[in-house]
Length: 252
Length: 252
DNA sequence: CCGACGCTTCGGCGCACGCCGCAGGGTGCC
DNA sequence: GGCACCCTGCGGCGTGCGCCGAAGCGTCGG
Image (cartoon, rainbow over all chains, first blue to last red; front, top):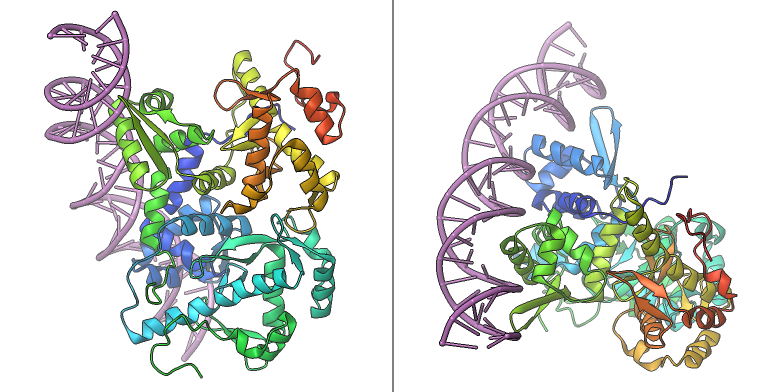
């Protein structure tokens, strides 16, 4: 217990924190780490296109600055975001920054973009078309009350129990249960917070979703009907929106 | 309607945005602007302790970067934060940055710190002890439902009507109705979002609150009993918490 | 035990940027 | 009309920082 000291951040502290993300390479690293997983220093160096020594220095700064945490394992150095609040910080900044304007150049890249727009992880919860759809359906079915911010209803608690998601640990978590997170591709909020993370984990655990490369998430053959049923939809409703031009190959 | 372009921000855009806040002087300027009002370039230069030409350059950058908006008026240049989302961005960064550790040096400074800790504006809503108390009481009286995120209840809608705060324009606003904003001094959330802004404006309009210097907010003699009644409290419950040592003068 | 590998430390280079002072232009006041 | 006043553009200076390559250390595998 200290005296009345003003915890109001001075400019210096804010600038030091912002400076961590004010570099091209460090920003790219943090965006990559938004998938919530731990990456090795070498992987990040290759991803960012810099020498290993350069990346090592950047990681040291990010860790000292409290944005990342590291875990040494043998000759590897694994780093990841320091927690949900660090992820939210990066998300917030990324959401405010203007998106890239250049369309995908190759067919391969266009496919990757489309896959990411359909479903991906955003730190520890589900994002993309599927993430926004999830939140929409919870609201439409009265499982969330969207009157003000979003709050879980009693019907929602029952729905969670059916899915096998225990509620007590969610309430115990220090982070908010329900949070809106602006989606990059959809420009609308998807479901974040402790609830978003728990649902995403449950879907992976149940085998409904599986990880593609990077942040990409795919709906499994078993998962499609199961998830549709849980959301009160027909499996076809989970398909990517038709507005996204299907580059060749037509959607099955 | 463009093609599938990935709006996912690349590292460059994120870094450019973060760089705006990565400078000591610019950070100080943005923190000052968190009070939601428009400042002149000269005021900000004096506040930041730099030459006018330097401040002018910084302001140009911040405006070009989309964080500030300006308004020329005669020989003055007024700038303010570009909007609630810009304010939220700065708040988020400031909240994550470590607070200043040094206690207030002079008695005068200690008083100012205590006044800010009691009540201040946070962009366009109420912060400090009073701001946190406001949210707590709304939750305790069932006017907000805090089960998940916070949502306005039907009782809350009635309470707003009694206060003379129309609800329709709040729903129409593009920003979330209820949002939690981490309070620097209390380390707990206070009420933000469209509702927080509307309530704060209503309190000023009704003469319950008045602006002190800078971001400081004071409860008026008329406002104390009125606000207490609206929150279902005794006027004494609005007093600053006893844990904050009252420097001299004892609390009346 | 030796070599491959991943990471880190250390100089050194070069660019970018934050700062100022001064001069100039537009505005408002007397 | 003349004079303060506020703001801005322009060199110029210094510094901080991002980058690399080379060298060194610990770890893992054969």
